[in-house]
Amino acid sequence: MAWQWRGRDDGPQPEARRWHQAIHPWDAEPAERQRLRPLVVIGYPSDAGVRANQGRPGAAEGPSALRTACSNLPAPSAFSLFDAGDVSGPKDDVLAWQRSLAAAVAAVRVGGGMPIVLGGGHDQAFGHWLGVVEAASKGAIVGCINIDAHVDMRPLTRGHPHSGSPFMQVHSHSALIGAPFRYLLLGMQPAHNTPALLQSAAAHGAQIVDADAFTPSQESSMAAIINRFIASVDLLCLSLDLDAFLASSAPGVSAPSPMGILPDAMLRTVLRRIAGSGKVAGIELAECSPPLDIGGRTARLGAALLDCVVRALPVLP
Ligand SMILES: [Mn+2]
Image 1 (cartoon, rainbow, N blue to C red):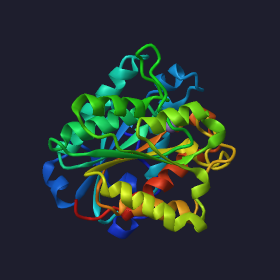
Image 2 (image 1 turned 90 degrees about the vertical axis):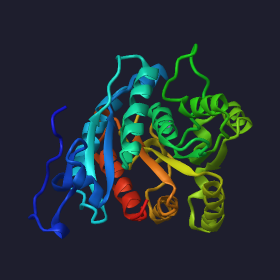
Image 3 (image 1 turned 180 degrees about the vertical axis):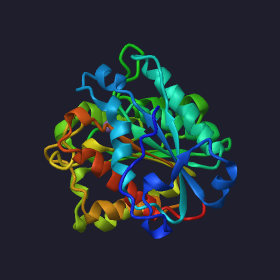
Image 4 (image 1 turned 90 degrees about the horizontal axis):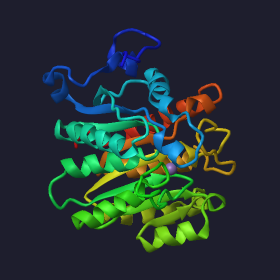
């Protein structure tokens, strides 16, 4: 993978630096890692799961567009930045891609870093979660908060995972290892999920909050739901599916949401509440599809979401 980080250069002083000036390969010298908590980018350049879910392809190009969009973000002063490169897998073998991502995420966790997965089809969410579980101490409860228009708990297709099934895989694997299933979905669009899918997800233990809750009058009940969920887990994977957002803000996704949530102050409050909990063990941006984007705005939204989350992360792990 060629180095993709380049952008505007306002000089080397710390307060003028941008991501592209601060970021290093993850195999850089360990001394640099120890000074500040490392945030480590991992690319998941696959739309195999999207194609298997009959979606519009293009998310394989997501990681490079997101790196470009993040290049000019102001560099955080409280964290060091690294790029561990892209994971890979056989073209259509979604499970192999997920396993490859899990190994990369686990390696970053073991190395003391916070993985930031740039995707890629939302099937990545299972690999992300699995990697955090594999690196966590035995018995740790690893929950998922997913901001998404869709429940993403469809059954597998003849045993094969796809971009609509990652949290069903999290459920199955949790049962396999005897761990409780903790999944909170925020931003669900009733128009994009049948009652059967919603009932099935709820019966499996998913907590579902629909998009209408993203309004100031619901802020305190939303805060209570999020706080209660966070109290029920030891660690959290934060999944941000760009198709949760209003299609004019995020046209570059397989399945745009004409009535999606706004990337407004309410959303930022929710992101800060989650990130500020101190339990976030991994962050992912999913479904960025550059061939379907308009002027790069979806990738730029992804970068802005990441900036908001990173600013709210506690400095100490
Ligand atoms: Mn999704």
